Image (cartoon, rainbow over all chains, first blue to last red; front, side, top):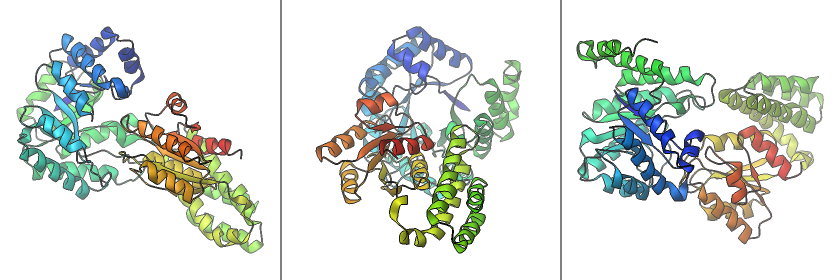
Length: 265
Length: 209
């Protein structure tokens, strides 16, 4: 299970304030906490600062990597901001994201082409948001093929099938899950990734829906998640879900988590 | 009494019951505008209030709107015959260019319809000209814009500028997850709301209803 720690996102108020005040300590602390909790990538997002996004994104990468020995997930649709962040990035970053929307594919894909960068391929096209599994798989197919044709290794592609709120259409959960299963079966070697919180929009006690949905997606083959790694319960259940899905040889990960006291809730 | 039971049926999210009761009231000769105002519209206001207070949730808003719509469909032929005093104003709504998110925009459109506004939904990825032309064509009182991306938010400002340049009399409203009151004020929007029921209140306020 690959975990992207989602907390350094400027759409969260304390983060926006820390960025504006250039409070490096605050950012470093959150990076460190996520690292200690087992995150593999630290997401950095400065999207709300439209004009200053590129500078802030670069600053975030610098500050995060001053304290943790982890790559970042550079969370921006803006190729200029991504490039600026990459200038200072150490290691192999993940870019979040490329999609089939006009203008957005070429610009970001050309940054990734011929590099070792990991890339999130978001299932969105100019035809709008996919609603069914069939629509998602169709977009995923195009994205994967176009990226592979540009020389991106399939192992570096993380398809995000796009989570939509179950409150607005009760089939949105099951269509997503079915898409994960088909993508993982149809394109051996590719990864699937998503954030959780969209699923529960408009409903109470969102945590229960988010967690249950994450577990169900892992059962369908989802192997990467953008989550809050400080949520110890969620992480423990994800480890268990992966073990139960047949992706934990001899249950070694589960036992390792036990010995590291990650299962003491 | 009869109109109150229509109100109750909308709150209970029961479309069939609403249709049945509206037919019954029409049969009894109850004033159609009171069926609309005190029955259906008042019920949607209550639904919006409960939503804002965290007692009702999105799926319940959707069902209530369906129930309301079913009632309006029965009422429509009679409304056209009666005077048009129940018309609240015309709203042109859409998600701005480059942005394909429609959930919030749909909720706002639905609640505005529920409040008796004439709503023209332009869909998603709507460019500035389309907003301006629709506003002219429909003689809109309000142009409402949604953006869910920080990258598409600035487009709202272009639409507002174009509306002013074309000297259209309509008011402008903006909303969407990254949009704030401060942003709305900065780009010269007349109204902003955090959620769908708030958008209805704002629209009424802007039109002095």
